[in-house]
Amino acid sequence: MASVSASCLRFHPLLLHSNQPAQGSFKLVSVSWPKSWFPSLKATRFRVSCAAKPETVQKVCDIVRKQLVLSPETLLTPETKFSELGADSLDTVEIVMGLEEEFNISVEEDSSQNITTVKEAADLIEKLVQKKAEAGA
Amino acid sequence: MFPSLLRAYSPMKMRCCFQRSICSASSSLVPVQLPSPMETHFWYVLPDQVKSVSLLNQYMGLLSPIEKENVLSMPGHQLQKRALLARALVRTTIARYQINGHVDPRSLKFKKNIHGKPEVVWQSEDGWCQPHLHFNISHSSSMIACGVTSNSRIGIDVEEKQRKIKNNVLAFARRYFSLHEMEYLSSISDSEVQHQEFIKLWTLKEAYVKALGKGFSAAPFKTFTVQVKTDSKRSFVLAEDLVFEASEIMVESLNDPKSLTSSWQFALLELAGSHYAAICMEKDKSIKVGMKVPVRLTAWKTIPFVEDECVSGTDAVMPIGGLIKL
Image (cartoon, rainbow over all chains, first blue to last red; front, side):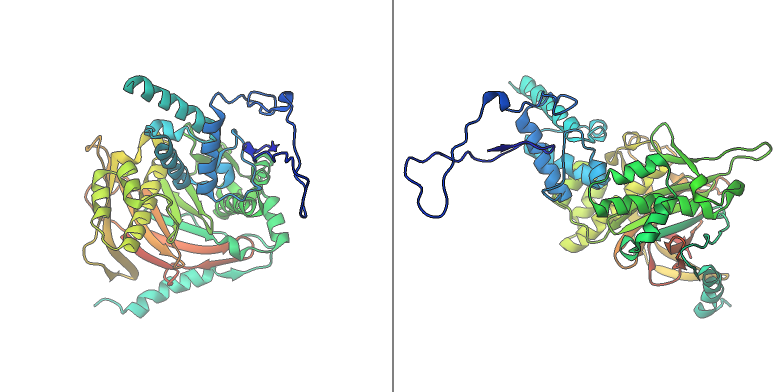
């Protein structure tokens, strides 16, 4: 079952339909998932479309959540500013470092100053990853 | 020949005690004279000590509509309280200096310079020269601080001593600090001491960049070295003041060795046993290059409208770096 909230998308495993009669204290339920219902990051859900891949955004969110020790209920959108989550400059630098390790990239000091939201981080990461691929390949 | 340590403390303590006042929440702020040249006023509030809802509401009433919006947009009560106290501290602190008749914290207007550093907008009157009050704030999760100077750019940074670093300290230093600083940290074998020295270096570097006021890209951390020369720690009495010489702190720009890094002076403190605080201020222009002049420091722990406690000269403020006069 997919839950979409203003936070980053979280996907829970679909519960499988079982042929066996339900035994025990719980019933298995099958869920059909209409294609039209599938949320796209380019949908109106987000006012500004995020050009980066969903997996990139998800990884960035995870790193931010871990660094800032956010409670699961805290909303984190691509546009949320880190400072609005209580991050100070040391947090931001640690986040950038975490991103560099995760994606195996190197962020220039000037650019790291411009990473203030999840979206900015994800966009920059994709740019750097692509640049690296083009240079290395 | 020199007065005893006890006597040296007395004039200082008396001056401080005079400032101590426990007032009711509705009373006005205790006014303070502007700092003199080479003097820093350091005000700090501990959020855990501010519990009264009516007091927090009173602080909220001081804020501009935009500030209120920013506070309320923070997720969660703790972050909102922190943001609120930060604005309340800045407004009430500056209002104490009663510049141009500004006694009401609400009446202060703020702007950001072209690099994003916050400044006060003084309504200039005919015949009045622009006041040269400079301030800078910093907050950690358990302390909010505001440094004030006259005629001198200032930057401050406070960090919890025990703040957890998610990354490996040396990897972090290798990535973000200068080579010299990284080598210094590498030379420390005790991981706890290494952690503490890391935090101290971070606060000093932050304070310097914030004092410059040109944004972080103007002075990326890797491009300058902060050196803490730990010679002998000593304190001595000069006239009636207590002067601490904990170590000399210098900054050197790697890109531009000739740049005026000698015009900056640092002070490093341990506050309330729990935090490191770094203060970086511009040396007064009248001071000749190479002359060693201490930073005069007066520090208050405050709950605005409730209590101001002068803590410089007590255990709450321990100088650990720089040339400091309390």
